[in-house]
Length: 634
Image (cartoon, rainbow, N blue to C red; front, side):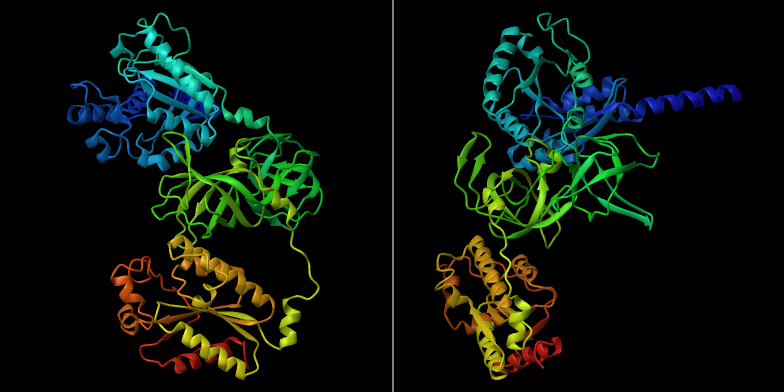
C-alpha cells in the first residue's frame, strides 16, 4: 500500500510541476449582444473538462430555469454570473474564468457588449494578449464590432481572432464567411489591426471549437482552441524588448545587503550588465540577481527578482532600472489617451494621482484635444470627459518619471488616474509621447530664495486660505485680518475672488471646469507670493476639496492654513448682499454654489470660524490668535 501511495504522490507532484511550467494566455471575448461570447467560453470550459460535478448539476438546473436552448445545456450560463445578466440575457460585468489544457493555461475575460460598459471592457482588455471578436454570421460587421475593434487596438492588443459564429444558421456558407472576413479586414487595416485569424464557428454545436467540423470542409485554418494553444504570447515578445525593472521595494534586511526588488516588465538581465537608474540617470553594473530559490545567471520578463548593484546608487520605489545602452525616456508632460471611468466628469486642471507601474505622482490634465466617438471613430471637440468617454489630452505631472510609449510597452506606458479624496480609480490612460517642451523647459536656479526674502521681511510666509459659501463673510474677515497684520508690521497681500475675476481670471465662467481652473490659477499665484516671503490671504468659495488640496500641495509643510468660514446656507442666503442667491433661485444664475452646484466643506481645516455667533472682527481676532499659535506672528 505504501508503494501505491508513493506512486500516487509522485504522479501528483509530476502533474503539478508540469502544470506550473505551462505558459499562460490571457484573452478576452467581445462583440455585439447575442453574438455568443458567453456561449463560446462556456463551451471551452465544458470541453476542457474544467467543471466539477456540482457545477455541471448547477448548470443543468440553471439551463432549465434561465436557458434559451429548450432544456439543453446553455453554455452561456457558465459565465453569466450576475442575476441581472441571467434575467436580461446579457453580460454586464467582466467575468473572468480560468481553464487549462495539456498545452497551456488560460484566463479569459468575457466583456460586456453595450456602449455604457466601455470601462468594463477596457478593464478586461488591459492585460489580454489576444482578443476574440465575435460576429453573428447572420448580421455581419456591425457598429459594435467596429467599436470593440477600435478599443482592442487602443488598448494595444495586436492579435485578433475573428470568430464568425452561428454558421449553422447560415447553412455553413463559405461565401458568407469570406464576405464578412473581407469586410472586417478592410476596416481593421484603418485602425492598425493586421494580425487577424478568421475562424467559422458554431459555439452551440461545437463546430471548429476543438476539432475541425465536417460542416466546413472548405476551411483549413486552426480551430479556436488550436489557435489559443499555439499563438505566441506577449511574454515571449516582451523578453526580446529593452530591459525594464520598475523598482517596487528597496530590500535592506541588514547592513551588508541592499537590493532592488520588482517584476521585470520587459527584456532580460545578466550579472555584470551595465544599467542606468531613472529618473536620476546614475549608472552601475549588476552584481547579483537574487531570488528566493538562489541567484540566477539571467532573468527575463515576468520574473520577480532582486538586483544588487556594484556601486552605492540612490534608488527608490518608483524608479526604473534599464540597461545603460537602451534607457527609457524621462519627462513630466505628455500627450495621452484617457478612458474616463467615473460618474463625475474629468475636469481639466483638477489634480489627480497618477499611478504608472510602481510610481505614483500628482497629475493634471488639460482640456481634451478631442474625444473619440467610438462608434464612428470621429474626433469631436470636448471641454471635459464623461463616463465611458475616450479623449486625447495633454498631461502634466509634478515631477519627471521614466516611461515608454504605450505602443512599445504596456507596463511602462499605461497608467491609471486616482481621485485624491476618495482613492477611487477614475480613469485609465496610455502615454503616446513626451511633449517637446517637457525637454526644453527647466527650472531656472536663483540666488535669492524664499528663505532670504522672508528673513528680509522678518516673518514666516504663509497662505491663509479662506473658504466658505457666498455671503459667509470670507472677504470681510480676510480684509480685517490683513489690516491687523499690516498694523503689526507684516508684509501681506489679499487675493479676493471678485477682484481676481476682473483681471487674471476674467476669461473664466462659473462652470465646474472653470471653477477648477480659477482655483488652480489662484493657487499658483499664491505659491509665487509665498516664495516672495509674503503672508497671502485668499478669499474664494473654492467649493471642491480636490482643488483646496492642490493648493495645499503647492506649499511647503506648515505654510498652508485653511480657514473654514462656516455659515449655514439659509443664513448666507438671508444676507445675500449681492443678490446672487435670488438670481440663482430664479434660474438666472447657473452653477451657483449651494443652489445647483455643490460645496464640499473642509474635513480638517486648521481653523473653523462660525459667523452665526461671531462678528467679523471677532472672527478676525480668532485668525490672529491661530497665527500666533502656529508661530507666524509673535
